[in-house]
Amino acid sequence: MNRHSPVPDEADSGPHPKPRFVLEVCCESLSDVVSAEAGGADRIELCSALDLGGLTPSLGLLLAAQAATQLPIWVMVRPRGGDFVYAPDEVAVMARDVELCRGTHPAGYVFGALHPDGTIDRDACRKLLDLCGPTPAVFHRAFDRTPVLSDALAAVSELGFRRVLTSGREDTAAAGASAIKRVRDRAAGRVEVLPCGQVRAENVEHLLAATGCDQVHGSFTEVVPLGDADGHSGYGPRMRVSREQVAAARYELDRLAGFAPPRGRPPRTVRPGGVPPGG
Image: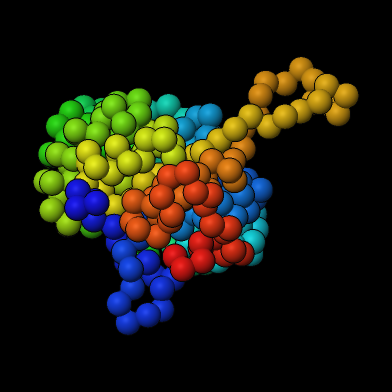
């Protein structure tokens, strides 16, 4: 579809790789990472405590995830839940987390910091970016808490972030699609724009068409079925990445890019490594 502009598939080793939409999956456990890769994810955002919006994962989880997959892993750096206005000691903790993770050579980092008035805390972000060195970083959904998106985008670009994660200030990316498009148009390629917020197979076509973006981010979670006789009684529901939901989104993205068969035909089997045959 001409409204979409898929990006080249790095897995295609031919002289003219076919464009392919990128699917990033948010994971908070090793099993999530395995399911995301099996479903066809291209990239992992690794965090803990998704119920709090995502916090810094443990170093042990990061090392285990890197051993379990060859997918690029972007590490969340967020010391606590709640707002994104961090005291100096909290920024120091974030800096230490970056330093500790740096030795594992992650694909990138995900973080953001704001002033009390909602504008981007350039000093805090610059300190963390300096510690990242050549490793790229994403400014996360703190972006949607800023008072003026165009000013926030300018700051993100000037600071040198690779991408910005946004739902267009709405609860879902589909609802915020028009704002996401404005951000993308203003970014003009200087910063990648990654739509997020209840992204699912059934809405990716609308989302890509309405925003012009070439990548999406989602958690694709389902409730873990637990039996009362297994020592799980008395706890709230636990969530996990659904391999089937990831695969369904992968299929839709590949269909839109011309890789998958038309609707009504079964999606191709995902081979180990998460890349559909021919993808």
